Image (cartoon, each protein chain N blue to C red):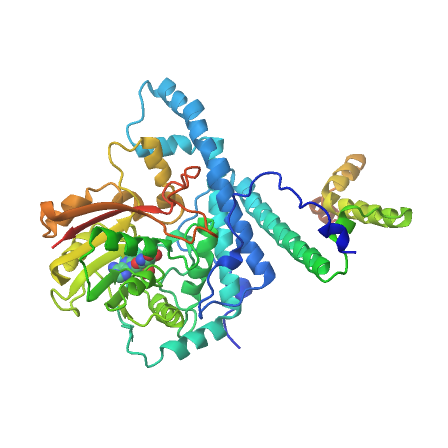
Length: 117
Length: 411
Ligand SMILES: C[S@@+](CC[C@H](N)C(=O)[O-])C[C@H]1O[C@@H](n2cnc3c(N)ncnc32)[C@H](O)[C@@H]1O
């Protein structure tokens, strides 16, 4: 087996100081978002291939996909998936809200408290 | 079931398609790595991002420059811009330039990661293939002790980790292979099937400008992985072509790649082209470089030009293909934009090289002023599948447009 680990080396930095054009945190996030956009395009293209191959082999037509109407049961299942998904995505905001209602000590404060003899 | 669709009129596109072709039009020579559906999709995406940035976002930088950057500078300084560096520094404070730059840099780095993933995950296989194709072949002449010029070692050009010379394993070719497979993404498909639109243009230009030239020996200095010298070797099949580069991986991959394309008349030689003392005086009919000078230095350029003069037969031709020089006629905004790669894409010498008068450097190296040559070429690609730079008026991708100037001389 090769000693080359692509997981580490594929994303290696190029030699030379990196310039930043925006607030560095914003720019870091921009880089992350660009890659997420890339991976979305990757999945989108794969689905497109899948649909076209399924259509070619007569399994379904893409027209059927476009006009697909879920039954009440199916729609509820999909809606539930979306709810769960958004709850995951926006977890941090949910917790911000919960924090508003609570009077809480920080871990440092609790640690100090617990260290009292 | 399927009759349902075939009866329907074909879906009308919302607008005529003018984006890059699908990555699968890229030519599969024998050194091509295996690419999965997802890996191809990444390159498709990145080609589109680059296209989008250059056609949809970059024009906004000029608009912002006209609307606010220049007026603000005039208002606060009471004068216009002195030079391109002042323009660039003013642009750096403008959000349009900042966002375009941040995305352009991010796209470059993402492209490197995408390509490196492909080649590194199959490194053993690629390296073994290159070995089988080049071992014991006299057309690969490596010089493992050759010192690297400072300008190669100092920085990884165009943000390519490991640059042209790094070997991650013995006989490594993953660097050049990554370079090769990603050119499509960086140029939005502008350089054609084998990324050789530049080399094809050079071959066509030589044949037209010098119909009587029947070169027996051709020298390409800084040939890289040879994608632009292959079409020249094909255009002059009788000629013996020597391709010199400092990077061993480039040369190894270059020979393997050329052989699988059926091109047998190129010898790949490791050397520093500022000192080619292994090669005899007056032994070449044609010497050229392609997008090379901007990655050297002021100290080495006179030596390189002098070597070309020494190596050229009387009556032979030398020329260098590069992006246009910064002349007083070129607007400062354009100069500043062309400097982007210099400062933000690890091409430091680009800005310095482009400000000199190449003619006088050629004359200083011994070429007669009345024997200098100037020309222009645009990428030659298969117009059925690839976008054509010569016809492309919508896209002025400063410094990256697939069209170049030619500066040279007859000895
Ligand atoms: C931008 S690439 C150009 C490659 C190729 N000519 C093309 O058309 O794409 C520059 C190449 O020049 C090589 N190089 C830089 N300095 C050199 C030198 N002093 N002697 C030989 N090769 C050099 C680098 O290793 C690199 O492969």
